[in-house]
Image 1 (cartoon, rainbow, N blue to C red):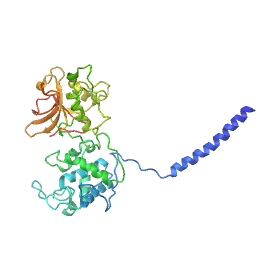
Image 2: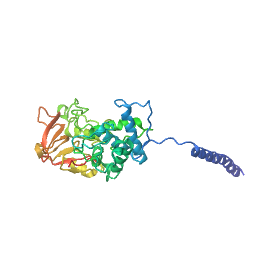
Image 3: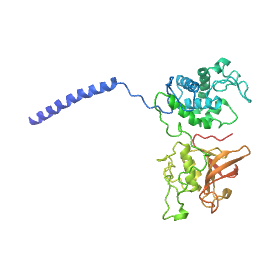
Length: 360
């Protein structure tokens, strides 16, 4: 009897809970959904009015940026694509509808300096912000794998301008504008939408005043947040990798102990090519700004045991490049920042980031 009463009591308690659960579920379904935070793979809508201000830009420029973003939204273009479109217009016209061209393209017109070759519509089309942006975006979406390319490379494949890296310096401003003119927040993580690192910015290594292991001895030496000894070539190179992959502060995305997917440490310079191969990142023989320069042991005067790594700061037209790094000079100038001009055939390989292509 007491057992049946107990079961009945449980039933009486459970049934109201069931009804309450159903009501709560219905309320959740009927309640307005919170706007989702956008990612690089989704498009954002434009919000702009007479009071919208972005430092450094006129109302005309903001309206043109908004027209580009609106054209992207209409074509379901991702946030990254909207940024690329704004970036290219910044690099071509400064977000202005120009009624003139330049030396290489005297017939170029509009926001994207589109040529009078039949590919970009009529003169009126090229001078119309929305139509010219739509035509640019349609061409961008036809580029195979454009979303995996570095933004300036993707833009170049549409515009076919002489310098594939012409647009690179406009990317941070494009990110800022799309953020300012969008209808909500979106995620800027990883390499997809992150502002590229400042390769070639000079000695911005954060731990340049930290003691080296040679100064204090290995028993007392500390490691940087990247888990390499301070002011070693590998620490500087991995700092640049983190920067370019959108990770310029702690917690850093790539560490000595977590870079390789097989759990092994990235290690000294001698193992970096293997580390890249294990991670599945590309390598090649052509210098590319921001790529890691890899010297096998003894190559190009590198240490005969550990080799050396550095970073490409600038690529020249004569087959040379400017290299930057740490600990590339003999004492007493070791463990300091250096730059030097190197022939492209001296290093053993160039180690690229996932979105980098070899410069043709």
